[in-house]
Length: 444
Image (cartoon, rainbow, N blue to C red; front, side, top):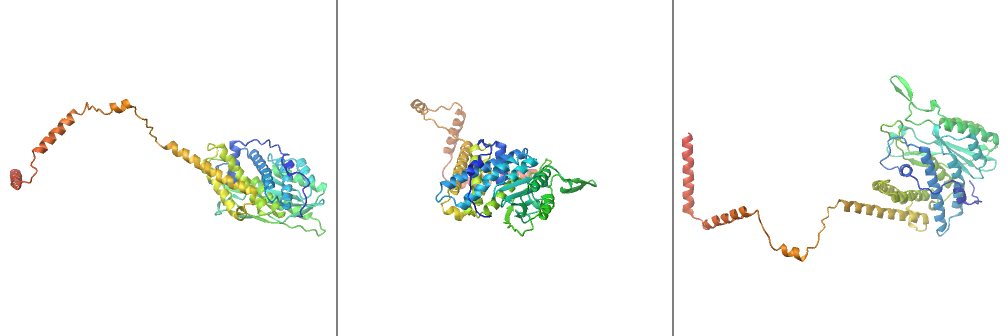
């Protein structure tokens, strides 16, 4: 994709979303933390109000992009033209992305309007919920746009049978080139609106119980109606004028879990978060944005903002051990881009380092409070002169018997000869032996 000059304010597009900078609730913040950081302890059932919480996640990402760009502009040198152009594309994308993902359904007219209003080089991702698929449209020129698709949530068997993370390449297939025609846009919009809101039984895995076949509602649907059927239809419509389009593939190590305990459906990592990450990374990669201004730097910045929010709400919402895990994961991400961090010229990453230091101090303070709460402290008071004078005289009202016994014991010891008398000892031994022999004879 060629570079271009942004002809608008990025922040103006970001502010088109009704953020009102309202802080997320405790459950919304925890949802974002669990899906972004993937800590060791996770829920054991599907999240409630998933679409509402995903909308909050989009808002937090958008707010973080706004702060990220502001911080980049404050740095020296200022952001490059490539970075400004790429983030301009994302700035136009996010309001449309938010509007299309407030529920599990979307109207064909809304989607068609979003496709028609795409400007040159615009990007439009869409989560096709019930087909477990992600779709990304890109406007390459006034006459053409591209279509790419991929699976979002991996099958349960793939997740649970893999040690560590699963390596996946995105998109699943090369991009398809389509003509920007009204008839095609209408067809695409109606098809995706239908697939987004409709379960298709044959896409769900099956299991056998009591000799009968049932749909496995705990597993994910196959995305083949999007990645194969719809993509095959588009492939047949590709223009035959020899126009070619390159497909930059990205590889991600996907961390996910399949967790349920007394729940109907398991907990899975947010597929919308994966779609958003793939869109951001592929767009910034295509624009050849440097690491210091691109995807990895922003991911660290976004994670740091979540850590700041988690530290501020207190341990009742985000426990200290969870906060420690979040900080460790961020530190590991910073280690991966240590060459950029060590240069000390990137303002956003400098803020990330400050966040790590600040959070460490907060956790150390909490630990000191915990230790102080567990210490059995003795509070001494200075005695008065009268108390000191009274304490010089002691009375022992219950010690008379013991003291008399102690005195008598001392007198008995004084009567004992301090020298060893051999003859007396021999006489005592002979007397004892005689009594013992007499006793034995009597018994016999």
